[in-house]
Image (tube, rainbow, N blue to C red):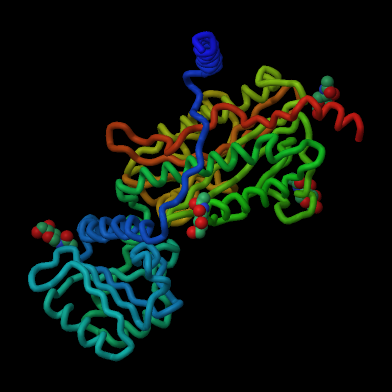
Amino acid sequence: MLHFTHVKVIYLYLLLAICTNSQDSTAIKVPEYHRLPPLREQAAIQDAWRDQRISNIPHILQKYGVDAWLMSQKEYAEDTVFWSLKRATQFSARRRTTQLFFANATEPIKPVYTWIDNTPEVWESLLDVLETQDPKTIAVNVDAEVAFSSGMHAGEYGKIKNRLGRKWNERLVSEPMIAVECIGTMVKDRLPWYRKLQETAWAIIEEGFSERVITPGETTTEDVEWWMRSKIQELNYTTWFQPSVSILDGRDPFENLTTSDQMTTINFGHVLHVDFGVTAMGLNTDTQHLAYVLYPGEDESDIPQGLLNGLKNANRVQDIVKSNMKVGVSGNEILKACLKQMESEGISGRVYSHPIGDWGHSAGTLIGMFNLQDDVPVLGDLPLLHNTYYSVELYAQYFVPERNATMTFYLEEDIYWIGEEEGWDWVYGQQKEFHLVKPPLSDLFRVQGL
Ligand SMILES: *[C@@H]1O[C@H](CO)[C@@H](O)[C@H](O)[C@H]1NC(C)=O
Ligand SMILES: *[C@@H]1O[C@H](CO)[C@@H](O)[C@H](O)[C@H]1NC(C)=O
Ligand SMILES: *[C@@H]1O[C@H](CO)[C@@H](O)[C@H](O)[C@H]1NC(C)=O
Ligand SMILES: *[C@@H]1O[C@H](CO)[C@@H](O)[C@H](O)[C@H]1NC(C)=O
């Protein structure tokens, strides 16, 4: 009995020693899947976030010097902002749903009015409130350029102008930053759940880019994409775009996305790329990672050095973008600063980073677009806002001697704003090591037998 325990202790020590030795202190822990709470609990969590967001609206109106904000829509013709203000149990607007927010509500006026009505009474009641509070400016979402601020349907806008009459029509204004800041601002309590979603996205990529899913010589990039879709469904999550898996061989994976040459068989020595996002609890993620397919019997130390250097180079661009994101500065100015710094460090690449949160491509300034590296019209001129989430999306090119080719290293990772002093941080992490597909030794015989 004693002997047995003794052996067990030695075994435990050995195990511990092996574990501690193989642990790289800078490595991120293995990402785990997070189950979502029951729907009823999810609704309560999301509604609490919504209440915090609505209580912030008067501050946003004050910031932009507008006295009131009027939104109105009918069932199935919702304003874009509606989706950020609805309760979890609302699935669409009903009848005519009209909302009026005040910057400085004074008794007996409330900060928010909501009418759900299908009779002309809504207009009488709205006019009563307007007469009592007498706002000098009333914002409506009719901007010609910013999607998030242009959600008032043309028919509804016509109806409102007709019903409110000349006095109030003259006070209608367009201030696109109101809707942008309302949708883009992420209340603090959302972060712990955003982190879990992000970790789940990493976990799906980690498993998808492993020998559990990929059999070199057999599995195609499309197989991995559909495996990821199934995994998302199994976890009761959804997504906002079809996962896109490609083999990096110097071609541009963003081109020819619909042609059949996407159907490519994964093999030993391939560098894999994925563009992947999940959606749950009103939040969206967006991640691009890279993987390397080892030959049977190989380990980490067999990854070509040129690939490791290429990834490191792309990591450097991620850090450059993150450190140049100064609140209040326009996306176009940030883009210029990033490209200048990349040039001075001898890195060639592109930056195309965007806000994320309520939408995959959410409200806020854009820091470049894939095809626009000089200046993004309108959206690039907006100022960067605090309390937002961003997806740092970019590529860096690197000459890989082992492949005798300049390869493109695409990365994308989500960040959140901590505060004036600290700036931004990764929501879950930054990919610093390739995901590895480690085929079993027996593959040697399988492949030879083919
Ligand atoms: C609201 O009240 C504050 C403080 O009284 C004032 O400075 C501001 O001009 C008012 N209106 C708006 C739109 O903020
Ligand atoms: C997904 O939802 C179903 C039905 O509510 C539940 O039985 C299952 O456990 C959920 N799966 C996960 C991974 O949360
Ligand atoms: C995209 O498709 C066109 C037409 O088939 C082809 O000429 C071109 O080389 C393709 N581009 C890439 C990057 O594969
Ligand atoms: C590397 O590529 C260049 C240009 O594509 C080619 O001229 C050269 O022969 C290649 N070198 C080797 C060793 O294959």
